[in-house]
Length: 137
Image (cartoon, rainbow, N blue to C red; front, side, top):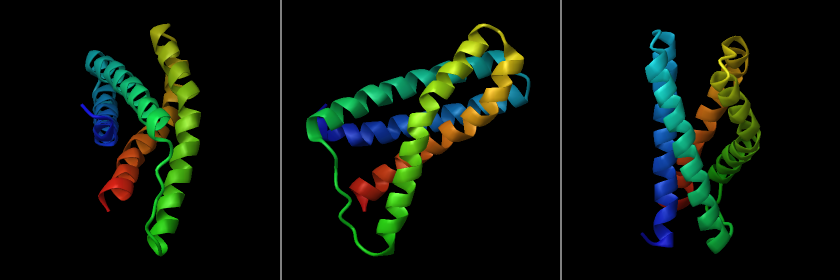
């Protein structure tokens, strides 16, 4: 795998994380705690792999400029700004959410998971959108 393959890999990892998060949400809503747990552990793992790959890529390449002009530029930077702010915010949120589940403090887990899940899902799906806008447009 070449360094130039990492953006596509990162998008796939983000998409996978999103699907795992949505599956985990479905499973907990239908009462399947074991499947929920497995999906969420997988989502954390995939997101960790994403972060490693993302850091390797950007350590070697630096930032990639968005060169398109017009209204799409405003759309891109709006998505990028919200994505970046939430990507930073969700790291401690995910850690707290996982620790509370691990300790079986499920009431506290649910309270933060209500905020963590939508923020994490947004970051995952907007990561895919950013990739498409930056590398495929």
